[in-house]
Length: 180
Ligand SMILES: [Fe+2]
Ligand SMILES: [Fe+2]
Image (cartoon, rainbow, N blue to C red; front, side, top):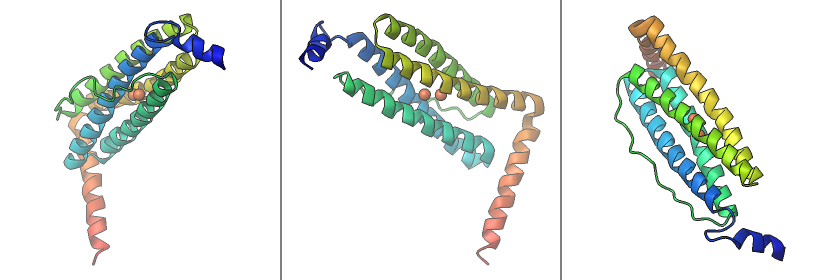
């Protein structure tokens, strides 16, 4: 027990100082992604694009789980949690631009997490390594979803969006009728 504590505290900034820095960098990216996607959820919902709005909502919630997991790991390593976004939410209104931006964001997160996982492995921090690997796999799923939507918009354009608006109007009418 004592030996474990000794190892944790042996270097300046702690045995896991570099892991903590990486985890905090990831935390900032996750907070920004959460906010960006929930912002896009509200924009799409307001426009009546129900399918796109629900994609953004569910991925935003998944990123929020990442925030929680990363913060817990930092605290376990006895680090300070820097609960701040790494960038301000972009006010994107165009659907294609939104999904292209989201795909880019996921790709850069995947690149960073792969690199972080490798560095954590080098420093024998296997649990942080696994955390980065697992999150990276989830970000790849997000990337896949965002790429599919970019492709749908490219292939079907405004028709794709109109179909969603029409479905939304139908649902609103149905809900309204149930109040009769
Ligand atoms: Fe994430
Ligand atoms: Fe993601």
